[in-house]
Image (cartoon, rainbow, N blue to C red; front, side, top):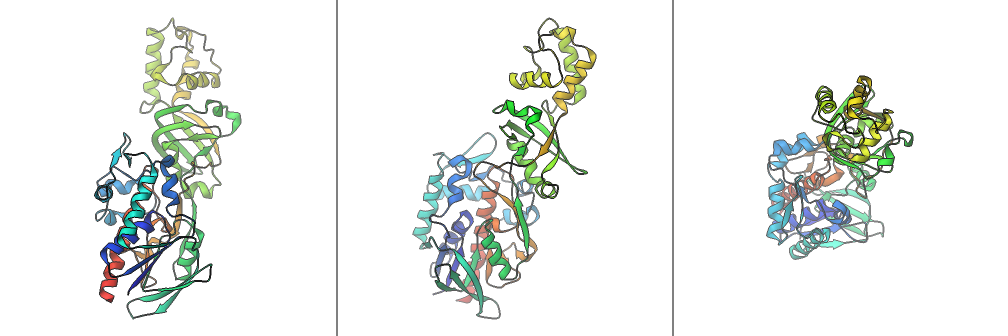
Length: 417
């Protein structure tokens, strides 16, 4: 019987295993997971709800959510995209719901629903899942001019032979080491999704818990500038939220090179420009001149944020709008639209850890996810130099590459038989 070994029991590994087993029922699919339980990242994702994918159904638009891998994924998403993911889970009894921001979750709001679905589908397809089986070495065995066979050695001393091998080990250094041993260059992995650390002396941390929708962030690192728009959350260590996470993803390598130091500007009033905000405040002086500045704020900003911005400009909040001087008005405009903070480090993003880096995409055929360096070897998931912004995009690349890899190795096995 033809045998496939899949190393890595995460989203990509399980999806590939199920698809391959259904494509080639006469084959033997063995999934090796190093931990005590598979699908650990699925369990914690989305705060335990599992952000399965994103409601973006145009491949050309979808790839814009991937700072690394967008070119390679363009064709891949034309073959398996979020619409296919939704249909796949629906076919197996799992309904997904779309939230306002486009993220899709199981209607149960429980990641266990997704885990149960994947494990049940794997069992039904005949996939063998072996946990607590960390792999320490992989060797090729000459099988044919077209492809290798493989010898896989686990830490417990178990030696297993296979006709095809799929690496789906996520960002694990072990997976990168195994890929390198089979001839693949590895782009050094670094964090991709993280929050920003802002020094305590700025006073911003006192606003921890305050959130603002639709702000514009501009980050300067060295001579480079990056801009993102989205919601912002003030934390006990600095700033987080979708806008920050998107900036961290697109600026991951740049920030790493500069030791996570730079300067950040916040436009709390986006999409209004400084000129538009100034005109609005001038009108406010006329229309609400008798009201206190601290108690009558523009644009419905959070009260704590508004008072904090006034304090940073040394403006007496008890003053009436009519008594605001021209220099004070200019200072408020700057605080609202060009509020500057030094970036002095990175924080974590909950329990989710996404990296950029991994197997160089030039060495992988994205029609089949087959190695260009080692015949018979396939890849799926975050072991590749692919990463998306937050919002279900990283899971979608796992489903897509897992599905493509299964299609590729299944055809290879059928040809072999």
